[in-house]
Amino acid sequence: MSVTLRACAILGAMSLAAALSACTHGQPAAAPTITITTTAQPSASATPVSQTAVPPAMVAVTSGGALVTLDPATGGLSRTLVPRHVVGDEISVSHGLVFFAVQKGCADEVESVPLAGGGVSEVAAGILPAASPDGTKLAYATEPSERQGCFPSTPNLVPRYRLDIRALATGAVTTLPQVPASQAASTLPAPISHLSWAADSKHLAVSVSAFQDNEGWNLVLVDAGVAKSYLTGPGTTYVPVTGKPARQRSYLREGVYLPDGDLFVSRACCGGVPTQNTSRLMWEVDPAGVLVRQVAIGFVSLEHTSLAVTADGKWLLYLAGHDLYVSHAGATPARLAGGLIAAAWS
Image (cartoon, rainbow, N blue to C red; front, side, top):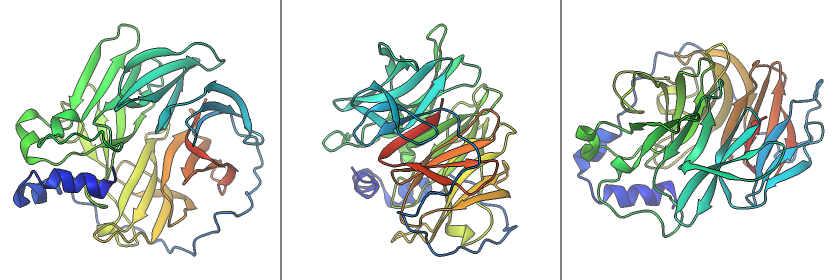
């Protein structure tokens, strides 16, 4: 189901006042501090920019749903770990295991497989797995499937959206709902679209996707030991959108932690109805949203997702549409491969 159709189904069961109230869960952005001038969109078939160093090893999910390892020098497929049914824009590697989500009817399930190849193990119901850097915890989203014929018609869907954090050694699960139960009836769903742990394995960057057209995008920093929900209350902090163009209508499409606590984000302009995207900027920002460095000017017509950073912070990767781009030490990103729906460093 598209974002627009999903919103129509949800809004049909809500009052106008409740819907308008739900559109304001983000905090006001800070005043502009920088100016960026965008250039014409580059050709999607442009020749890859040569890198001065070979990237580290990577895993990826093909558009056909196969979980694979990639040759970092060429971007070619090295090994198929899981042949089909892998979904979502997020996979995660920790201590020799690859965590991923598979489609099972109208449900999704997080599973794991050894990076070297082998049997698959079931982990939990959910999607978008993110293993903590210390290898002790796995965060994942649990939310209704948006596939055709699967999205529920329940009037109040908010209780179905949650962030689960599983202790890998014991299986104990800490659940953070979208909002406290007392707020659920007056709030629109805020689906999680990506998860990223900070280097301390205590904080999570939670990317929240749109619930209506391009309204609702947010990047929330969550203290997993304090927060009682992933969207609001103690232990949650919003990363504001700063800079130009059109700061008031721009949004952070996705964000992941860098080792020093800053963030690698996809900053899109502009939201609203109808959607009018005029720029896609790949930035490194501090937790206050202030620009540290511009990594790239993205493709206006493509989503930029599956952001990932190596543990030392020297390599970045992301997908522009289905194309994989990598950047080393701040260099202009290079196109390495195509036909993918997710990628991660391994």
